[in-house]
Length: 467
Image (cartoon, rainbow, N blue to C red; front, side, top):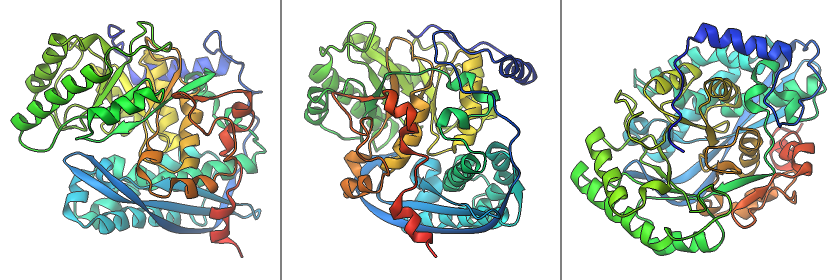
């Protein structure tokens, strides 16, 4: 399960092969045919823009040695010169995308800085034209990042912070692109060059809850009893590195004792898999090896499906020799960064259409497909509509080694105090795919036919820009 390492590659060769694949219409075997080839796309001119945001209270979510208690939902509106208005959503993740910005400001001020970057992007787009949301993102990302560095005072502001700010804008651009070009389904939306990487069709997608640092084993056992079969477990406890590793080892022991013996039909070995996320808290490879050695000692090692982002991005330690699959998340900002992580032995990528834009995610999933590096979808504690943007990606990714369903972390129901209210804003809230059933989402024919509801308008968010 952990043996397949990414091949070394040249980016030029990758681009050439991707283009050939797309041109020939060759997709992976045993997969649904993609829709008819795309005709020439229209040039879309953006006449008007607007934005707004809503604050949503959270039950405190602890990670990276801190906690978030308030989630800003950023909402962007693009109107074309043909009179079509589209509203895109983004959930802001300041602590996740750049913990230095989070630490330097009050929680609200950190969110305000990110929101200002979304607004800056909209003002840049106003009066301009585009034919392709992917190219639009490429065009505006450098200037939005530069603006972010200026207003935050951080010359090394992480690219993920700018990408997170651009999700609502990118989201609106895709919706506008779809309507202007008469595209009715997500599959039609995906440009030919990126279709191979998003060509699978899972009938089920695992719903992966996330448990903050300090969660009790009893709470984790409760989730397993409810049918959740893969759980995201935050490690990297607060304190010094010595205190952290001692707490993390104790946590691993308690979790394995509580649920290690559980069985599931969704894994090859029939055992419940562990998904650990340290959010860059481990300073040295040796410390991570202590954690893994302890896992071996207590018989938990074989059940570790993936360890996500153990190190800070600046740590260039090679991780391909740990005997366990290590995933890149925050450090894989762009497709170039993902390529570099693969060179360092990272053998999985956590993709986030809801945190790094759908445009960038398409590039990353295509690269990963070419390099045979498995992907799965991670969450940013997003709202229910964005959960389905992520689900459209998760359902189309190649199967994760050792598992028979797509993988998607989704933790909003755990942390939003008003989750049911947010669910009422979903245009297809009653869709069969929106509720977790025994640990999975049923991504049935209706899910694919309706694209999870993401192309339908939400009355609540549309009303913000009425008139």
